[in-house]
Image (spheres, rainbow, N blue to C red):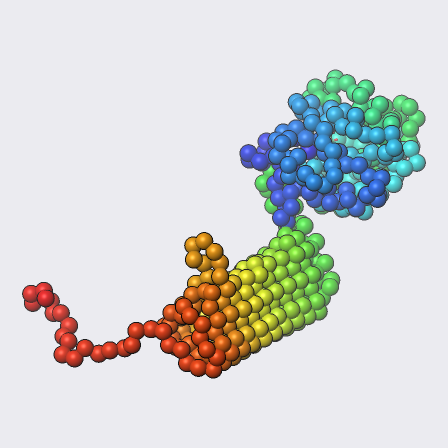
Length: 454
Ligand code: UD1
Ligand code: CA
């Protein structure tokens, strides 16, 4: 169910498209669903309404069906819209909420399994403060009799702390029939999905309550506060899993993983780092404070100093990067490469031992082993229409403040004098200087204040 507006988010964006750990709330639920049953026999229907086009576009290409609910007349009405899409071949229907993102696949699977024998299975939890939730009403023998919504509950029922989490599983044929028979004679004039419980009881269909393993899995997002709370709960789960694997986090409360982070042995991560997409960090590597790494591989023993931004790059074994470095897509650093402060590297390979330690730009370059690339030097790789390559041979020494106008090749062992603008290939093993010669003007005097201008 993903039709709700989410008024309390106070946002133009449909609620289920707000993101948690870099993925939409709805995508979290869909990813959990992908772990239930097997792909061949599973059919997922997303019920959309508010912002339907946006929601459907956001999860296109995943083999999903969509059912539109306009207007939104309650959770039972929502499921009614999906009934035509529920097929006879699909034995069990699992109903999940698009705004309850941290449900685990194993829990959803257990709920579906509890219904498999023909029962109606409800995911429930005991809350210290059950306000607002549907209460699980049981008879004297403990059997579930009904779910009563907050607004319809008697004072005695309001004292019940066992609540319905909004997730259920039921035999498809029964659920379809039940939801089509729902009435909206209640305090909110809504079609309550929860009324199917009393229908099941009346027909003698067993109703089972499955206890949710923990509160985090069943919490919904209705406000920015709840979204932030769930984000931290999720990040805590991720941090705990990393620490279980031996990763040393300076502070598990100051880590954000928005994707998949894989770490080897003896990895250390300082505070305030953000990992996006797929990042892997090799044995013994260290990540300094406040780094942002996206879709990147860091090899063993590399050190990333603070405030470094890395995206789509590979960092070789024992390399040193930062502080304040920027590696952009296609940056491939060999072993023991040094990239220092305020150095930007894009679509360039640097062979083992190459160094660019200060204030430099390497774009579309192939840099040989042990090259020393001076402070302030840049590749002029773009002519306004096309990108061109710069090739720098092994053991080249590029002085400070050089401009290498691509396409250009510097032969192995070449030395480029500081301040050169290199627009032609430089031969191997020789000194090339391309700058105006220094001259001194004899008898020149500096203009003085209070004398006529010359
Ligand atoms: C519902 C349950 C309540 C349960 C609670 C758990 C009903 C009648 N009540 O409460 O017992 O304790 O969830 O959070 O089911 N939605 C639609 N279309 C609608 C209405 C809702 O798609 O017309 C979606 C919402 O976007 C949301 C979900 O259904 O994802 C739950 O709706 P919400 O209004 O939050 O739940 P309640 O009705 O308050
Ligand atoms: Ca409601």
